[in-house]
Length: 249
Ligand code: GLN
Image (cartoon, rainbow, N blue to C red; front, side, top):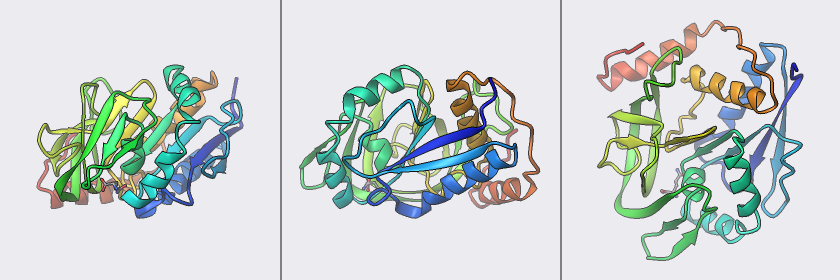
């Protein structure tokens, strides 16, 4: 079955929208359209229900601790369906604050505990300093994409720990906690990451992976035809060079 339209639910855009996460949506839309697939972005405001039959991919962006507290208070009603959807292979992109909220909890500097969606087995606790700067990671070897690196920008005080497959190994920057060299999480069709930038403009391989996931979830296993990504890889490689990371294929 060939999908005509990919429907992306953008969760709580009025609160979680830090560092141009909107750019991730723009990239997904442009790359799908270049393949003749329409994209419909469905903004879901906090407390509005998600109809999983009507969407193919969920995006949850980053936010300040203050905004995360507001979101956290309303998460309980989403948790059971969302856990079930993730278990069922529903594609999901969660960035920074959104990534933290997929886990059990986020403990703020004050000691206050913000409950998360408990969809993934991860915990986050604020450290004493922010982890800020450009970042480069190497994806797991099993993910055979056009490139094995992902680049971007991170800015978080939360330190995340989990025992699952990371999205990547930190080559430069901080990642989940600045200690164990793990960055993000990669589980089923969920990509969780601290990488903003926004993430997708300089990482077209990741954008296409998410589009393929959205198609595959609806039974469309087509291979996306390659696009001319000269500019994207130039930006990607410039970031690697700035971080003194050797280019990897
Ligand atoms: N408020 C969270 C932190 O500082 C997440 C920040 C973000 O989304 N960039 O860790």
